[in-house]
Amino acid sequence: MQELLGSIVTLGVLGGVFALYNYFSWPEWVAWVLLGLAVLMVLLTIPSLITPFFKYKNTRYGVTEEFLLIKTGALKQTEQVIPMAKIQAVSTEQGMMMRKYKMMSISVQTTGSNHAMPFLYEKEAKSLRNKIAHYAKIEEVEAE
Image (cartoon, rainbow, N blue to C red; front, side, top):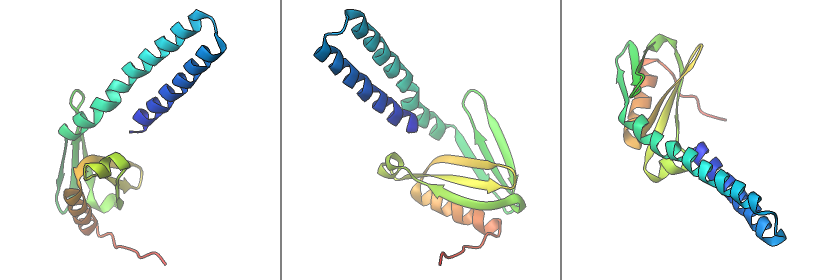
């Protein structure tokens, strides 16, 4: 999502520079450079539009009382087996686009690393977060 927003901002800046090109009557080669950069930005934006779909389709997880299994990847598959005893914190994250589609990501923190389960539906994500927290014996702490 951040890549997409960055691309939109960059295209806006290129549009502003193109307006300056027209206003100040800069040489013609400047317009070609700006057009080339705009086409390049559009081409580089396409993967950021497709990636969430593939992440959603190719992420699997399993939860038992002893382990959390996360399997990701379409071309390069990765399997992570995380012991519940090593899990220190579980959190959910939801950006504005994910909120629109009622989705969340779960982040699991262990002693040495951080593991993510992206693009889960809200109900499923909250249920999974609570189940992991229960099995990992993580107690909810109220803020004062």
